[in-house]
Length: 314
Ligand SMILES: O=C(O)CCC(=O)C(=O)O
Image (cartoon, rainbow, N blue to C red):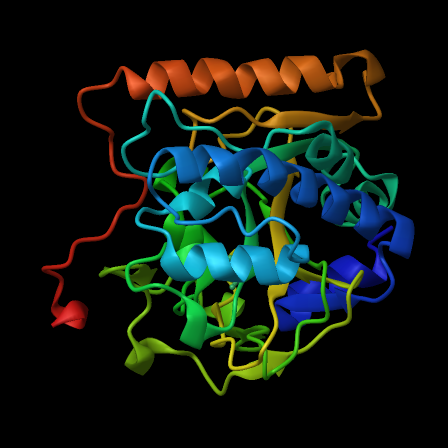
């Protein structure tokens, strides 16, 4: 039987699921990131990237102060996937048990199963986005902490995964509002197939190729937006005084190409063979192995298919 969630995603291109995660689940992630910053800030200070560890400030103000003065893209150390570009041998990402638990949260997987079935791989194109107030972000800071330009998720992976049913789950850790930079999407845009993208500073769809009027999608902490891989979407600038925090997770059937095959997925649920679900240690070590492999590469193959010379990009 086709679920109501799948019907809505197939029809409109996205669906909001309210109250997907409860307060304890959100707090587990918040605590994990507080501890991470506690570990990272002294390292960044020792490397001369920040002048102070800002110890004693609440997480939100501490991160905002750090991102406002950091001399390098330190946010990458908080992400949950490696960079799409050069991977440094000393790169670290947040492959913590709390992130693993989030990726395997039963409440998320139950909804995902209702859309793509019970053989579920967490696709490794996954990010945390903690957007500080835009006016406090240092120039040149990674785009994960600022507005995201128009794109389709299928447009930002390699074409070998075009036929993979990759489902995006955009999960709000704080309320996401129009003021603090929520997601926006063009309803029904997934019905038109792939749109051309341009590899500018971000890989983006030129405004004139949008399929219709954008709709802002404010949601509460703990809610999630489930989105089709061809839905045109972007996010607004954070004009508020506090952070906007989300995770964009992706799930797909086990065994199909991920579009970023140098990164490891996580077998999160298998109804057919539950024994193949990966442990925390297996998942963590697979990211270590990917890092070692990527850091040794002379040149990294492009992670998208677009050329800046295309006519639509002029
Ligand atoms: O959270 C954002 O700012 C953008 C997220 C996004 O574009 C995505 O999940 O593909």
